[in-house]
Length: 73
Image 1 (cartoon, helix red, strand yellow):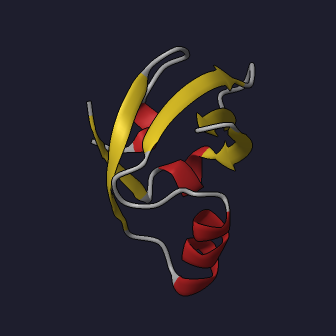
Image 2 (image 1 turned 180 degrees about the vertical axis):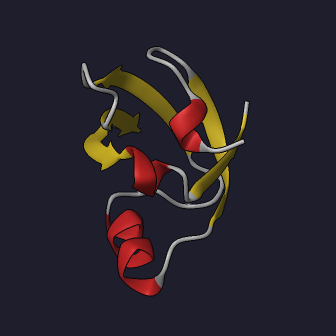
């Protein structure tokens, strides 16, 4: 299961990140790492991006980026 499958208000734990080095570094800087608890705050109307929260950090991800984050609920 990947992060892009979560709906608004759902949470999960990150199990794996399959992104390239550049995107993985961006994820690391925001705390998107294996073992982190992630909460989906909202999706855009067109469902092209999603807003997530990890601890007190909020960030927007393209769904194509969220597909690279494996999760378990």
